[in-house]
Length: 124
Image (cartoon, rainbow, N blue to C red; front, side, top):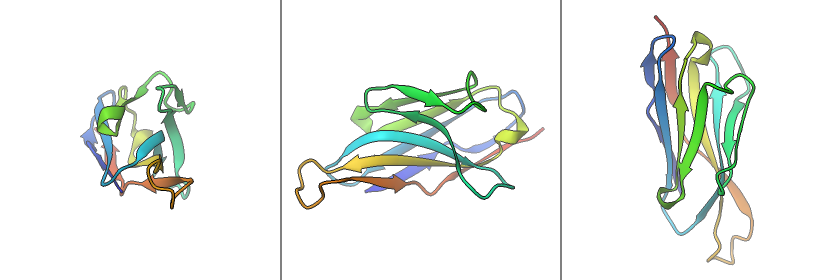
């Protein structure tokens, strides 16, 4: 299974970007998906937003009202619409997916997969 993010880049303060993240490469089911942020001066990745398979979304306080997470289960893809960007949003954005394999009895649990990250820079 591969998890790949795309859509990062440079934006001006007040601008918008849309990130995408797709899981591919096998017979699996994607459960919860999350977007994480790693700032240039932070050590730990922070969860920004989560979404269940049923579409229930939760947000961290720093992005409520500015970011929107959504998903397309048919495409195994999660999106992050980022509006009203501020310089503090700069950093690497990672996607994670909780994946299980209902058709394979060898793998009975739920496994976390991570993307490689995509850089977002907010600057004037």
